[in-house]
Length: 612
Image (cartoon, rainbow, N blue to C red; front, top):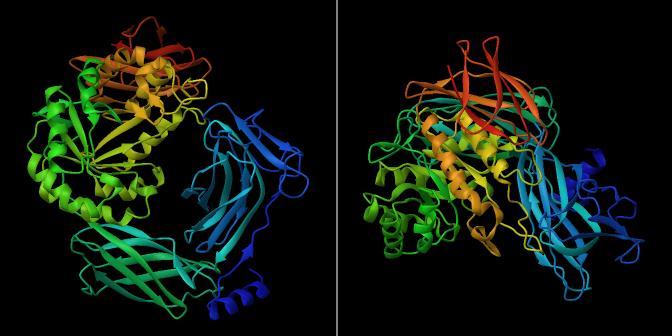
């Protein structure tokens, strides 16, 4: 930061005024052909410069799509961590037309991790009048870059023009990139800390005063810090915390320049529920259970879903105990288990009294698979810090049924794994990402969990349609089965599907539904293998192909899949030489050479082999 700019910011802050500092954007009026933003190549024929329609200058950008692929244009700019930025853009459509638009800000740290992503309100672009959209989002202290997006959220068309991006609030004198910590309750802990100073520092960091305060206001003495200057504005180091009770705390570091606070959430190290095995398998009536569940269903559909091979559903988020009990009774009658959501109206702490009443009334109900605190709290700043204490109280209310969270961001798995017994992950690659997003996400979750914790992969069966009624983000049967293989090979012990219903969406009226019973039967067969708890090492030589091996009921099984749209070949070795293989899933181009399985796989092809 230049001395002149720093002086201006200091004067504005001292006077209590807001900071307004424009960030230079390339081609903010979309005057170039093609526009100087990314996304044009991703959506050929969808994005073009329009010199007949513009708000100012010589042109605007026109985005038109008959598909629900949410086309976007994006540009990346450097930003200051800890500051607040406002993104503004003008948009319009055509009278009576379709199309809804929104803006988005994504923040990234120096590890290239996407730490924050926020959308503006969605606005219908069905008029020729230009409207300005605005989105204001604070940047975490470790932010170095922002991606800003203008986006068509539905099929239809819209124009964008005159985009601006500005700092509206300067960074605080001191801010922390370590906004929250999870620590083992009852044991001292040394944890990393990262701080950002607005003003440049010398080589020696200022010495802080540390205080730790519990949620009831009690001070806990004994915290110490070791800090070093990483660059003139960044201080990194560790804080050693004393043993803390299993309740929320606040760590405050006070410097001459200012103070910063970090929320500290202790967790109990020994908290395995009774209905999870030592290796993370669900137990129903004392027996191993592999869930195959689906989202967004009504109780009247439970028998139909059971006939299709589903053995679990995401249940109803009932607003009272009576409705909650009725939904569980309907699941029991259909011989289906319920992943019970407790987040009525997407609330956590506000729902806790009702959640405890529901658990007290039905914790022994035979249809209860788990209690779900919230869906994607990592994307919900209003409830993100309410989850830990809610988890503790739900555990006390029912030590048997697992407590579940669905988490969207793999970077946050190391934190959230301490406040759930079951972790649902929801990687949705189609249509924008490779199918290996599934295996990468499951692998990241399994890497940080305790052996007794459970991971379920929620996969996409689609939830939006194009204007012609065709599914916009539904996999083919082969792609869907491939995603199942990818999840199980990397350690998932359950599969979920999203979604049966969404606005304008009915899975039963889509092409994949005709084969869903077949898909569920294949998944159930795979589930029986992976729940054997006898995984074997499988070493793959071959680009992109993934494989896993298990010993089950006296036989050795090899799961292998090609997640690419091109044919692939691979060699798979186990610890012991393989002398023979037999495909259990139809004809496979596989043979044995030098003690390994040699296999050729067409695009999106998966096989289960019995080997010896």
